[in-house]
Image (cartoon, rainbow, N blue to C red):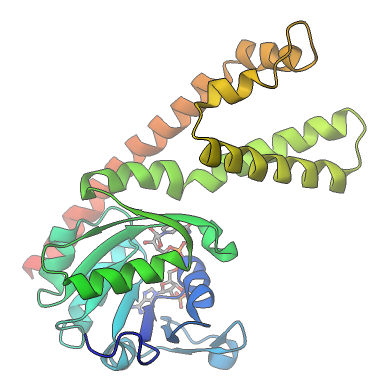
Amino acid sequence: MKNHGAKKLNIAIIGAGKIGSAIAVSLQNHYNVVATRRRKIKDNLINGTIPVTRDNRQAASNADIIIVTVKPGQIIRVLQNIKDEVKGKPVISFAAAIPISMLKKAAPESQIIRAMTNIAVMAQSSYTVYAFSDNVTDENKKIAVEIFSKFGASREVDEKYIDAMTALSGSGPAYLYTVIEALTYGGLLIGLPRDIAMEAVAHTFIGTAKLLLSSKNHPAELKDMVVTPGGVTIEGIYELEDSRVRTAMMKAISAAFKKSKIIAEDIQKDSMKLLEE
Ligand SMILES: NC(=O)c1ccc[n+]([C@@H]2O[C@H](COP(=O)([O-])OP(=O)(O)OC[C@H]3O[C@@H](n4cnc5c(N)ncnc54)[C@H](OP(=O)(O)O)[C@@H]3O)[C@@H](O)[C@H]2O)c1
C-alpha cells in the first residue's frame, strides 16, 4: 500500500455495534473512518461525528483497510459480499471463533488479519491479540499494528491461542467487573460511601496491574509485600482461600473456553455450508 505516513488512511468498519463503534471512536482522530450497520441509526452518525452507512460494498471500496466487527455467524456472508472490494487490501476480523482459513475462503484475494480485543477499547485500554495470514505484506502488518496500538496494549500470537484469549481477555472484563462489584460491596459492608468504595477498588485494580507489569515480579511476591504476619491482610487472604477463590477463577476461564469451542463448532459448520454453496 502506498502513501503510508503521507496521508490519512481510509478505514471502513463493517458492523459497528458495541466493539466496532468503540474501535471507530478510538481511530477517528488518526484515520478517516466510515462505519456500517445493518439497520439505519439516528443521524447516521456514531459519536456525533463518524459517518454510518448500510452500504458495505461502497464503504469497503473506498477504504484502504477494512475492519469487520459483525457477529461470528454473520462474517462469512459479509465477506463474501465485499470480496471484490477488498481484493489486495488488509481485512481485520474481530469475529470470535472463525479461523483465518475460513475467512480466506470467503475473501480469497484479501490479506486477512484475525484479532481479538475487549470492551476496554472504549477507554483505549484494551488488550488486543492478533495473527496474520501468510499473505499479509510487511507494510500492511505495520499498518495493522499501528491500528491496534490505538486500542491499548497489543501482541502478535500464534492463531491457535486466539480462542483461548477470547475466553481469557475477551470475556475478561466481565469477570473483573464481577470482582470489582464484590469488592465494592465489601466496602459498603464496612460502612464506606458507595462512590469512594468503587473508586478505591477501580484504582486498586489499575495500580495492581501496573505494578505487576512494571516490576515483572511474580504476583505471589508482590502479594507477600502486603501480607504482614499476624496483620490485617492475612485475615482477608485466609477468607479468600477458604472460599476457594482461585479455583473459582480457573473454573470460570475453563468453562468459558469449553463453551467457546462448542459455539465455534456450530458456527463453523454453518459457515462451511455457506462457503460450499
Ligand atoms: N462485545 C465484546 O466485548 C467483544 C469483545 C471482543 C470481540 N468481540 C467480537 O466482536 C464482534 C461483534 O460483537 P459486538 O458485541 O460488538 O456485537 P454487536 O453489538 O451485535 O455488533 C454487531 C454489529 O454488526 C452489525 N451487522 C450485522 N450484520 C451486518 C451486515 N450485514 N452489514 C453491516 N453491519 C452488520 C449490526 O448492525 P445492527 O445493529 O444494525 O443490527 C451490529 O451493529 C463479534 O464477532 C464478537 O465476537 C466482541
